[in-house]
Image (cartoon, rainbow, N blue to C red):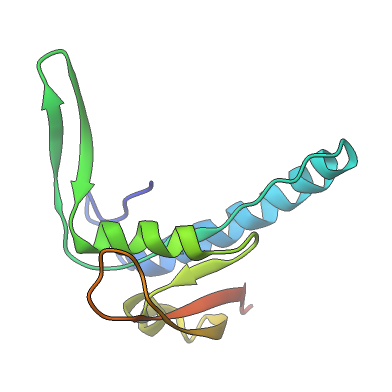
Length: 129
C-alpha cells in the first residue's frame, strides 16, 4: 500500500498516484514477459481511491507500524482485488481528478465486500501526452 498526501502534503495526490501506477504497470510488463518464458504467470492489478482516513502508528511496544484505516483504505484494497492483470481501477473521485490527463474506460458498478453500495469504477488505459 502506498499513501499519497501523508505524512507530508503534496499537490494533486490522485494524479501522482495514477502516474506512479502507470509507470509500475509499464515496468512490470517486461518482467512478466520474461517470467512467462519460464512457465510462470504473474498478475499485477492496482486499485486507487481518494478520501479521508485515520492514519497513525498501530501496534504494541516493540512492534508497531504506520498504517491507515477507514472506508477509503478498504475501497482501494477491494478495487485492487477486483483488478485483473494490467488493470488500474480507480474510484469516481480519482476519475474526476485525472479524466483530463488519462484515457479511462468505465468498468461499471462493482459490488465490493464491506461497502454498502456499489462503486462506480474506471480502468486507466493510458496517460495522454
